[in-house]
Image (cartoon, rainbow, N blue to C red):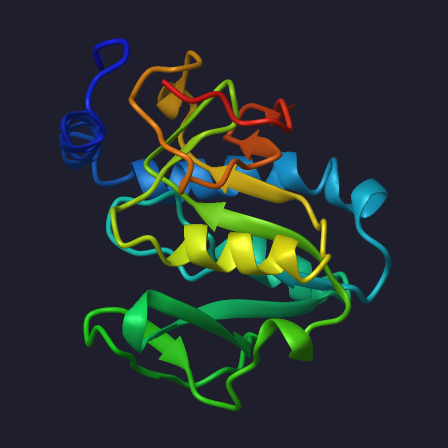
Length: 207
């Protein structure tokens, strides 16, 4: 169990350990279930042919292959993140035929193709965001790089209120204030797990 109001680094280490202890088949099984759950909600939430930001999963993250394929198959414009210097994100369009190349971090593949900024994505209506955990106040536990917090802050500043949805395993949904957050952390609007899509408070709660 992760201690209530734990320092963020300690909580992150606990969630990393829990992922390492998952059985090898867990990511694929979770990915299939969360894709099914996502498509019970997304068609009512996102306009046809709108842009959806997702991501290429890795390691013990819930597998996003079926989710990405389903988004593309339903006609959405799918983009995935590209890590840039200074902990910034840009985006690249993804299709099942995309060629993957090493990115800023060689172990994290990225699609080849033009890099897109927020201004290049006027039709962005939904973001599916990786996380190690999400609490019930909407605070996301990331991997510590701050890429998504910076991007979400910039997106909101640009006037785009597209909901951000943290994607985690069921056991990674935590009570509010399970770790210490600060004003730099950007809340998500909902959490997607293999068994549920849960809308969360829009206002962050800080410890």
